[in-house]
Image 1 (cartoon, helix red, strand yellow):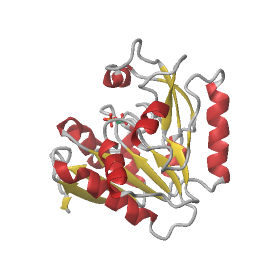
Image 2 (image 1 turned 90 degrees about the horizontal axis):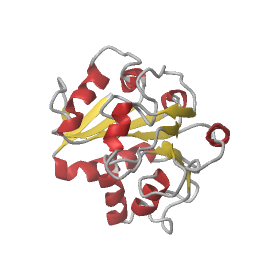
Image 3 (image 1 turned 90 degrees about the vertical axis):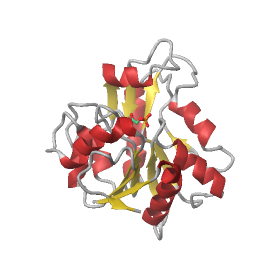
Length: 236
Ligand code: PGA
């Protein structure tokens, strides 16, 4: 595991530098991308630097909400805001209003497996230790699926939603753990405790992110606030 901790203002640039490194020399890369507050600085840095994925890159959203109508809180809306569709390849994700979300996530997961699985999984960490919508209780081999969101997750995202979605679809722990490399991003003091639990406490389904400890190619980019509870960090 490699942990890079940087001052908050360098978080976006350090995140992109790490991603570039992991993608160097990878042909037709298959990449999972997160949403939420954490990757905003990464995507802003991509836009600022004019960074482009290679033309043969395949992008998969880590997760999506199930919601009956268009809403700015959906991950589809998030990606449209942060990664201009004119400059970035399409991102595979289920329709938020899919009549049969289980069928849609299964189809996307099949596409992912046909593409050879993930080269790089870019992940945030939920305050409850979830990865994507692999909520607490998820085994390390949990598959792509529809999930009931926990109260903690619903509270975390509640702001813009009325009402808050109750279900989502997610790539599975299985697909994330099988990625050739994993890039975990975490920033802000609110992530200090969960980052330490994920990286340094015993592995447990109560904190699905703790299973990342067994991943052979794990890079963590965090800011100094999120790194505060780690026992030892490598300063960039
Ligand atoms: P956040 O969410 O980036 O908005 O903190 C991360 C997550 O819940 O996975």
